[in-house]
Image (cartoon, rainbow, N blue to C red; front, side, top):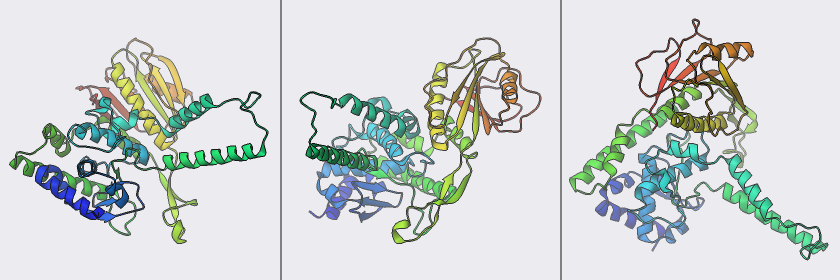
Amino acid sequence: MIAKDKVIKARAALVLDEPFFGSLILRLKTKEDPSCKTMWVDGKTLGFNPMFVDSLSIDVLKGCLCHEVLHLALSHHTRRGNREKVKWNSAGDYAINAMIKNKFSLPGGCLFDPKYSALSAEDIYSQLPTDKEKKKDQNKEEGNGQTSSLGGSGASDSPAADSQSEKDKSEDSNKDKSEDDNPDPGGCGEVRDADVGEGKGVPTEADLSRSEAEWKVAVSQAAQQAKTFGKLPAGFDRVVDDIINPKINWRALLRQFMDTLVKSDYSWVHPNRRHIYAGIYLPSCRDSEVGTMVIGVDTSGSISDKMLTQVAAELSSILNDIRADCYVVHADSKVQNTEYFAPGDSISKLNAKGGGGTDFNPVFKWIEKENITPSCVIYFTDLWGSFPETQPDYPVLWIVDGKTSRKAPFGEVVEFTGE
């Protein structure tokens, strides 16, 4: 069977048996794309490698199609921001496969872990290792597997052996490079950033919002149609409700706050690689460093370990994206401890030290004493404490553990929900 006909057959089967997914998949135009490894979606098109489709049974192909439309239903094509593409695809795969693995057949080796059930792609992304951490682990494993060339029967002075060794290293290097460049590590299909039309370039915030809104409407209509036939998958009522009526997430608000601090500029030093193959040299958009961030941690015992752990993971991801250095200042009625993190460092946990009454003044006085000009201050607290009389001339974000009736005299306030 021709690959395109196989896709049509699987799509038709979904329309009859799973109208929720079938309705969504019909919104996409199909395109044979031998250049991709598996398949991909961008909000408008379903691209697929004919050889990949040929290798699948109809049931597994149906599972892959459901996987792909859920990337769009969950707005993974509009929410990546500055996150790493491959890591974002992996996070989306874990979120989706936890929903459908027990209902649909998926390719062997698909990304699935029960611990990621009910978590968003953003939550999962913050828990996945960075490229730096993965390479560190890989180098450690390679180091443990090495054998000494000093003495023993394994040693060789033969030029042929040296040549073979160099060949093996070259092949290993090429293998690692191809694996690192694989945009679909889960093998179920990748999600690409939203397509805004030929020649329009990078999507604007308005473009992303428009695509996201269109897919919310599509999800609502598909769910209503499936309910009419009594075929909305079990458990998808909640999924659909979360898509149509999303709760305001503290992670998204924190990201939005940080994104406003990132200034981008165009650089000819690093030309846009998308156009080099055609002999066209255009500047690329480069994100500049944010500068120095200061994180204040209220150590009076008013904030939870859960909050500190989850926020640390999100901040670690953000610092890796925006290349900022960071001071963490632990304080109650006075500064108890300070920590420094360089760009790209991983913040595994914010260790609160102290336990006295709350006074926010010491953190701001410490900034002044150390002659630091921060790009922003992020303060974790319950807002019960004494504030500085004078508003600082840099942005301040207060992350509050749970709901509170307290108001900050300056800055923005975000409620930590634990979700």
